[in-house]
Image 1: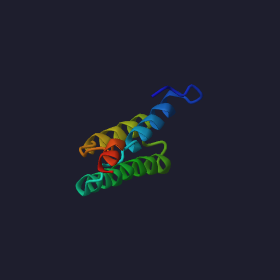
Image 2: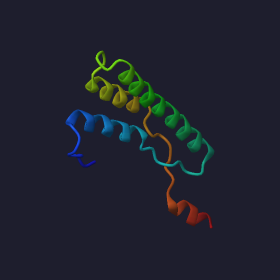
Image 3: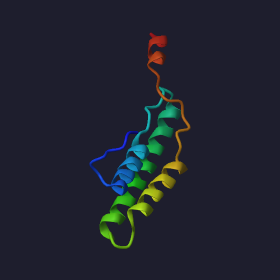
Image 4: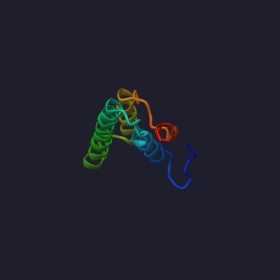
Length: 94
């Protein structure tokens, strides 16, 4: 990801962590893959919401570095383990 030069480094790191957490590929058409993706989306978005809510609620008690670290750790707990959707799957079926 390219660095946004208009933001201070700590803000760029926070935004990068949020984007990486929420950048989740679509699942294949398999029900199990779709279910797995749904779980990952729920868990990762919950982690981002929690981290940002705490940062906003207690800005002096929780630094940006800690927020970024929490988001990255939470994201790592829920890796993409399903088969991502590929356009060629749809073409093969047709």
